[in-house]
Image 1 (cartoon, helix red, strand yellow):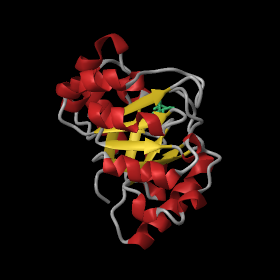
Image 2 (tube, protein in one colour; image 1 turned 45 degrees about the vertical axis):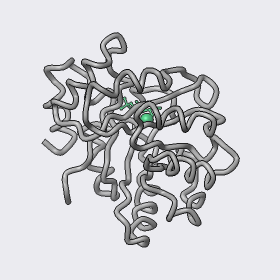
Image 3 (cartoon, protein in one colour; image 1 turned 180 degrees about the horizontal axis):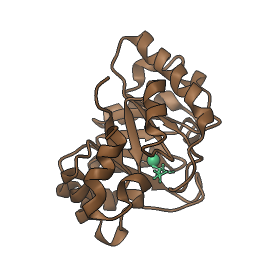
Image 4 (tube, helix red, strand yellow; image 1 turned 180 degrees about the vertical axis):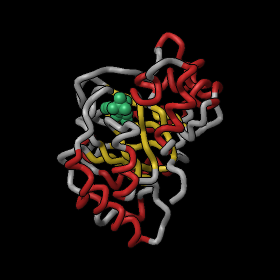
Length: 219
Ligand code: DX5
Ligand code: ZN
C-alpha cells in the first residue's frame, strides 16, 4: 500500500512557538498539519480559534486539516475557512443537521470531513457518502493528547473502509488518538490511509521529528 498521509497534531507542539513548530514538522516530512479546535463545552478542554489558524497559515504550505470539537459548529465554519483551513472535519453530534453542515463546508471552498467518536456508529453517514471528502475515526475520547489507543475502534475502521470502497471514490480514512509506531500498523491493516499523531511526532523535540514521522510510516 502507498505510504500513509501523516498529519502531526499541533496540540502536542510548544504553543509558545507554534509557527516554528509547524515549519519543523513540514520540513520533517509531514503531509498535513492537524489542528485541534476545542471549546470546553463539546469536549472538556479549550485550545485555539480561527485567529491562531490564520496566524499559522503563512508559515507552511502543507494543507491544514482542521478538527472542530465545538458545538454549535455551524456559526464558526466560515471563520475557519477564511483563516486558511483546507479540510474541516466535524462531529455529527456538534449540530442538528450534519448534511447542512457538510454542504456549508464545501460552499466555503473546503473539503468536508466527518469525525466518529468511539461511541458513534458508521451508520450516521450511510446516506451521506456523496457529501464527504474525508472520514476521521477517533481511537480515543476527544479532548486530550497522550491517551491510550482503543483497539475497539479497529473494526469500525474496517467497516468504514468497506463503505468507502463501495463509493469508488478515494476518500481518505484518517485515525486520531494514541497513534504510535506500534498502533499505526493496526490502523493501516484495517484500511486507514491517514494518521494523526501528536505525542508520537512531537516527543523528543525538533531534532527527533523526522525520525518520529518515519517511524509512523513504518521505519
Ligand atoms: C484529541 C485530538 C488528537 C490528539 C492526539 O482530541 O483530536 O488530535 O492531539 O494526540 P495523541 O497523538 O497524543 O493521542
Ligand atoms: Zn484531532
